[in-house]
Each structure stands twice: as structure tokens, then as C-alpha cells.
Image 1 (tube, helix red, strand yellow):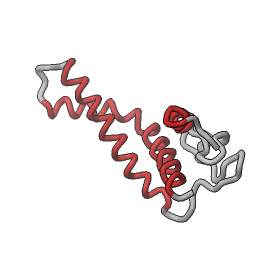
Image 2 (cartoon, helix red, strand yellow):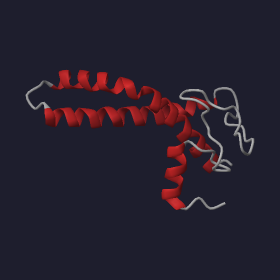
Image 3 (tube, one colour):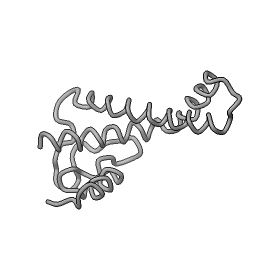
Image 4 (cartoon, one colour):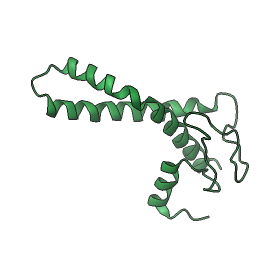
Length: 117
């Protein structure tokens, strides 16, 4: 099944859709995952500890977002010390934690299913 290349894959990940059928949602709520795809029935968790790999994506997303916030604060508040800017960036990052959790799992499922269908 063709997904339309990279732009299509990005759209599927952004919408949180199943990597196989590209129709069923991975999450049934803000933080609640479906055990299986509602459309094709593929299990999203293969084994106990499966989502340990999602921690790598979570780290990259989290650090990347904090660096973007830090860079933005650096240009907005030029006279502040870097430690204070980092603290403000960390506080501004807090509302993004649920999204980082959600997308790290979505990215992990897509990454894993791409290399080991």
C-alpha cells in the first residue's frame, strides 16, 4: 500500500494513524492507547517493555523542543543569564510533555513496523 512518500508518511504520523492500514487511530484519547488498531486489528504493543524504545524518540523530541524554546528566549531576552533562560525554557516545556509522550510512541510504532513489519 502506497502512503504517498515522505509527505504522506508525515501526515499519517501527525494524525496518529496505524502504520499498516493508515486508517485506525493509535490513541483513543489524549493519553490512552488502543491495544489494537480499530480498523485492521494489528497489535500496537508486541511484547512487555516494547515501548522502551520510544524513550529514544522522547529524548530527541524533548531536547529538541527545549533547545528551540531556549533559542527563542535567548533572542527575546538577551541580557538574561543562560541558566535562567534554561529554567524558563524548562517551565515552558512542561505543557508539551503529553504531546512528547504521545508522539514518541507513535514514532516508535512507525519506526519499528517499518523495519520489522
